[in-house]
Image (cartoon, rainbow, N blue to C red; front, top):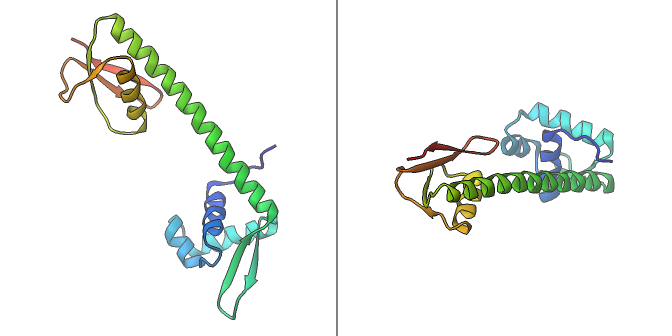
Length: 155
């Protein structure tokens, strides 16, 4: 069973895993949250047993992930990877279906409106299906709609 972890908690564990000597001020800047919030989250992580704090000197602290903290961090990373692969698979199938449908209707060239990861999946799929990618938005224009792909223009 995966333990629930909030995004800021995971981000803190990630930063601490990368740099155990990071300051709360630096954590605040890196994560875009107030220093007071960083302090509150760190205390929460200590209580949960996910990190431990050592005093290096009067003003300097070192944060280390405990074995339990490392376990939680790893579980969260694995869950994220699993979810990402599932999203990729769904988008890839939608892109394949669209490419096949377009080929069956005689479309040979498409213009891809957008430049993000979803469109990268569609670009790869179109090329594999033998569709030419146009540099101009004429004919068949495709774009991502957040959950899949849509045809904007089909002449």
